[in-house]
Length: 90
Image 1 (tube, rainbow, N blue to C red):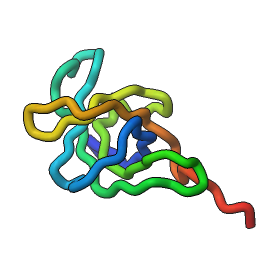
Image 2 (cartoon, rainbow, N blue to C red):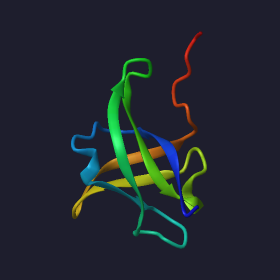
Image 3 (cartoon, rainbow, N blue to C red):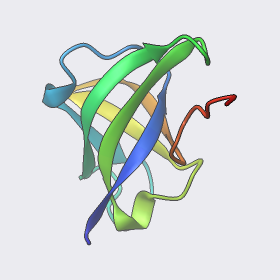
């Protein structure tokens, strides 16, 4: 598949995640859309905002940094994370 579902660690909370896209910082697709956010929340366990999104297969490696855009505005950065982002202690 061209895109895979990945976890995202966000530097800022996202409202209206359906309107948010992910753009590459480097590589062959630098500056272009390489994914989209499907849902977002603040994790009580991590104490930070997290999200789920579909990411282009060339950018799915954990630790990859992607820019978060809403329309023409760069609103923050995200880091790709393996799923599950938070594991249960049980």
